Length: 172
Length: 458
Image (tube, rainbow over all chains, first blue to last red; front, side, top):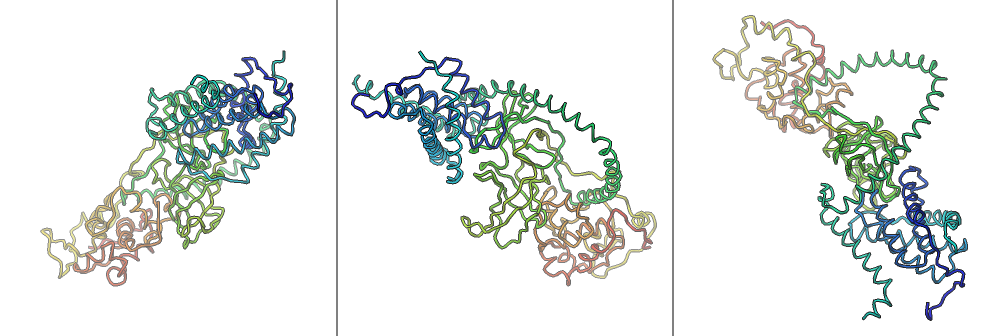
């Protein structure tokens, strides 16, 4: 933080902590719901990504943020038919960016949470597509409408979900 | 140096984590067969195994609990309308019994024709019912997880079906569960036939989870509503299973001379609950129920009674005095011996049919002239990838039709004409000159199923 521009107040750069059950249980629950509830709406909604973003911006520490993203992404990869690592890499980057952003920007109010999540969904999708096309040789196509819809839905869901998950933070 | 690592700790850790994942990814992409084989030393495989093994019991419990309550409610609700349904079902049974009689006749006829052509058909001999317990949860990968795994005999590349149609194929198998790649995944594909036009293609998934055929030329006429079935050519999905119906057919601008044919899947891939895994497919030549083909009275009498065969001045004489070539090769074979496999008799006569070839022999069955004796259901059973009538069909039709169905022996042709008449490639080229009767006559005659008695030629 030395010499860097910060848009956060002293209170906002507070590093939140979570209990171990929450740190493990919430990501597992998110993945469980994602794969178990065979609801079409949930395929647009990316619960593991939202959890990754939340933990990253709340902890405000890049290394735990990216590790959390890598683990969640790898677990999520296990359920897909793709090589393991696609979601892992994408969520690692999101975790890193989220925790770095959390230091500089106020990520506590609903507006910034919506915009942040909207942007991270696009980044996540872009990274995923880049890896899939360049490294794996996939044949997916970028669908703007669908991607924007997904970003919008996830952004709105993040506003609600993050406010609920704020209660899980350990406060001194 | 130490200061460098401290200062750039976060980016360095990020690069290290990404590097590990990229190397892991590259390993999988470079050696996919290892991952598929499920070798014990494969780290990626272990992650999948651990994850699914940990989640599967919990999901099974949730699924079972949910089904318990749902089934209880459904049972109560069903009881209220069971009397009316029972009455409707009785009517349905009567109707189906009548249909069954008709279908049985068609099936018997189809089997006889299949035997004649040595047509090898694949039968599903064993399936394993499974419940869907999870999905991939993303739109980037259309995968479901079923609650049957290696312990239940599931293996990779087994077809997964429902009564409505095909669902996908088994991708990865774990001890207690398996991953199934749905047919609408963009990595998926299946060989299909358009039932009406008999065109073959490969149906693939799109990024939006739709089914599409992209390898049919744009000059073909494809109509919406045409039923699409599996061709069996991919050696994964058994032949004849419903895939879906054509929704639309438009020129594919990205793939210019071809059409983009969108298919609506028969099985509801978004609401899969129970599926069946085809664990065993038997390939055999169908046998005619009740033993060999019935011998015609004329043939029996011809064998038992002394006869004076017609002499053909051009044909060489055999020791037994029977004139070879007095009838076309196919008809001769059929008349002399109504063998269960008289298709062999066709081969020397120049047809290019290969025994056991599921595709080639079936072509003329539905489009050829003799196919007129085959009912649509019989044709469906025997036919596979039929194209519009081609040159070889008349000769083959002659063989099948005459051998199986001709109650009245075909009028003999001179021996010198025989090769042309029976030749598959020239049979259609000059149908009227060489063997017009042999190719056309059986089509108008009664099928083999109901041979009409006739007077023996003595």
